[in-house]
Length: 132
Image 1 (tube, rainbow, N blue to C red):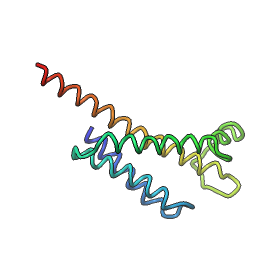
Image 2: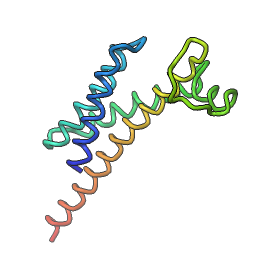
Image 3: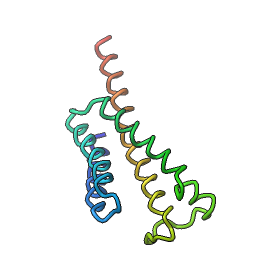
């Protein structure tokens, strides 16, 4: 899990860095920075479930908002036939940014869920060792 957390931390740090030219850079630098920080804490065993759950709550609720927002993921999927979102963003295609942000939040959530599952698995192994 340490290798996964190193990978996630690097990805989230790079993602935070490239947000400097985003329309709302402080928000996204904070979101990705938080994800990177929690993954780095997990590498050294200094994370807590509270940090993971707090991140998950924010990420999931914001992802739900982006899914149903005007020009959000639902719009991209239903009205624009899930067209390619890897191209450049433009004012006439605002759903591209919201959809990309939605998937970023899903990746962040995935990292936190993996950490929570790993913590639970590790805790169960420790309990089994103590019980023997």
